[in-house]
Image 1 (cartoon, helix red, strand yellow):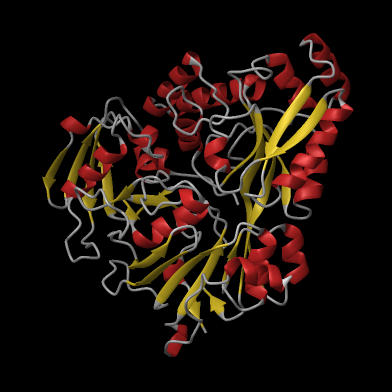
Image 2: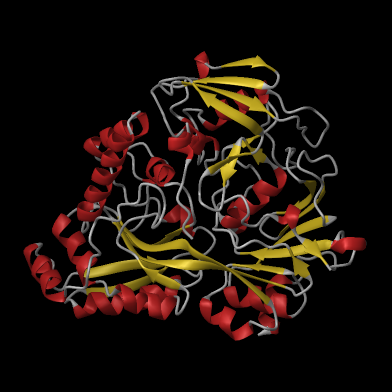
Length: 507
């Protein structure tokens, strides 16, 4: 069991006031000795009217942060991106990894009901509903739910459809939260997390309060308010102006400019930055043109422009430094002559590339501007299309041909399961290859470590040579807080300690 669970470590004020006016209903306050109490106000980019409090539909970073405040998963990802027990006190597989027994902690929902094995099964049944497209569906699809069972109120046996040596990754999957059995209405959500629901203004704010009965101990702060500002400058200005105490997702330039006035927390090598080419449609259904884009990309220029001093170049693969990462694949270098030759071979001389980007994420527009110039230098034409910051992440799953893309941390296995298999629900590149799917099945079923690593290597070789994800860099994840805030961890996005407000204190 140690083998499949181990991981290597890797590791202006007016604008702000205008965007946040009417959102914050309270002020930060000191609530007791030891830095406890008070209301922490945290500002994130949001999704406007499309936002949800349903944890199984969470997709944006603000939705994920709210979900982890309100709910628990059976497992979550540690700083080394390995699965750590949460509602699951322990797990144990059988010899061939087809049956996993989960023992639950003694925990309760906000309405006082205990968290039971039946709630776990009901939550996973909802996520894997064939009529729905919940984020964690692909990760949990390997569970044979009809033949899984609640042994008792605190013990679940999951029967799997196939051997799966990395099943704890599925328990920690993005969106795999446990809700009370039968839950369908999330306008006033009930979870088992460290905070409970108070109020919600869709697209504006969510107010939560301390859960004194939380299984891991009550949070230090009394209240937690999530606010929305899609522009990074507005989030910074709100922090500088005292409207919030926590600002999520800063650019390196902002961090350098304001360090000293606010507290900067950096998590190195946390955020993958890429351009996602759709391989199922013109023009990027042509392998030669995809390779040309790989080769015409000046990765160092992109890193120096978008994340100066706070990032490193990528090699068109996700998960640099994680378990299974293909370090043996040589770093792809800029080769403009070869790129031009491939463009000519593809009959794409002078082709106009429409590059979709958005202010939905820090650095996207800057990166798209640099990349457009690099496309032009190779003889292509390039136009930048600015997508809606409110619907960008859902739009790029189906629309356009190449778009700015990024990801926080997750195991490489999960990245593949959710984004690169033929049935993946968040497949932005539309990569769908039966031979690739078969390699994934081999990797996750293998009892032998060498066989598993060989399958992961082959998958990454295919992606590196033919895939649609042009990974040009890995950035530090940067958040800024008021000097009165303590306890914020330098954790990669999407891991347990990222945006973990139950451990934060206000002075």
